[in-house]
Image (tube, rainbow, N blue to C red; front, side):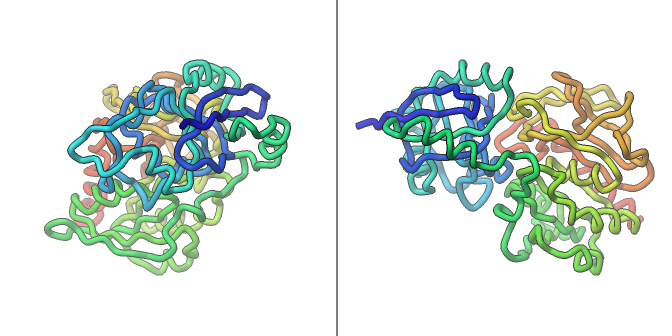
Length: 369
């Protein structure tokens, strides 16, 4: 028997539906994702920590869930909203239902929601705090909880999703490089792809002191994706600059991209509703090629002119989003350091941007040639 519930936004707009998964309710920032597939990768992406994610594709849960598709150790979203939860699932890879998966994780979902109306509202009003609760919870009471919940601006959420201890991942085949991955909420496929390209990867917790990192001598340094406001993660900037001064190649994605920009004086800002999907077109400025990319971010690096990074004269823009002209990639003008705002590891896809991992390998090889 279904249990009625609702989503309440901090501006007072409510959306009705039925609860699934855990029935405890949820608080977080309401955002939307327009991907047609990959809901389990969305659920387990640490960059979604603290957020209630709405899927715009109308039928979710139809192929179930399995351990292989998880991008982290568990569900990371604060809550999940769908138009229709599939009543059954069918896939030879499935190991369970989406409903059971969220229930086991203690995460509340809401189905039967007019997700088109919700998405249109968030597109115009912007991402905002929200809550999910059972229908018998008074709106006034839920609104008090929403108003007491912290806004995404100013939050460092990396400590809640980073690894608790360093761990090593061996290269697949012949080892060519030693890479440090700084874990701000890394997706498993990023580590997997580095290993497939011949890297022994040491993944370090976000709290690792800069001095400890600067004592190491890696061939390359990988700055991972992660949640929250990049302005609140200032402690990593010293290590980024220090390795750059040594000529160590640095590759950043998502939050790592924003932190690389900030390490050299760049400024970041919060987008109205963010970019979250597997279908964002990005132009590569050096060739004019257009990549279809997977994205998940609510903050961006500020541009200045055609290829300038505001506040960071040492950096230049390399990629631009064709939907809104925001920066999607940058590179240091002299040092082997580059980053992209989107997710080139792209689990489950698209895979237009996998070349960036080879670019990282080429930079490390050039340093030793």
